[in-house]
Length: 190
Ligand SMILES: [Zn+2]
Image (cartoon, rainbow, N blue to C red; front, side, top):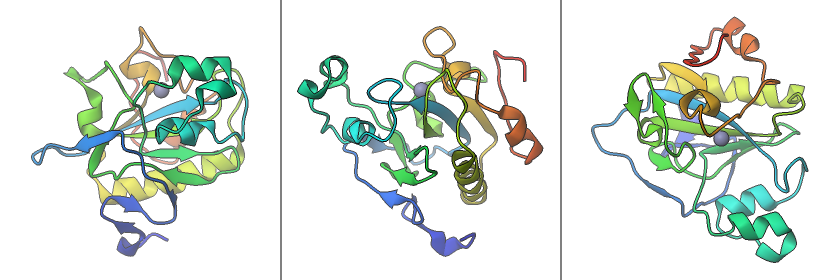
């Protein structure tokens, strides 16, 4: 899997590919230097529903859940989702900007979407992630670090601390540090 052929046009081919319309081209002089980790579950705290993929592809059905009517208008996306079973799904080419970070800043730079890759872990702030998710995340981070000049891996809660709490207290940063990934958390003690 760790070969150049695992990538095509910013797509990591081992991931199941899905197309989100919510992206824009990166500026040609931009480099991808940051990975931002998130958690998401839809409906909140429920796993295995198609709603996350529907949200990222603008196909969420407002009538399926009261909460969906609140978020159905959002145009959001991430590059990747890792399900509880460890399946990777890719929505946006890493060569393009996904809409995952929102108002944010990292190391003094705002608008992190411009220079980052977003990875959503199916989950919530209140329980641990699965072993299969960590394994897939490790493989994906390895691949991203080979393919792009990644300088840091951080959390959404670190780049938007006033608004966001994901991936949350249960995410095991130490595990990434021990694996040698360049974890940098500006607002949290590691
Ligand atoms: Zn997030």
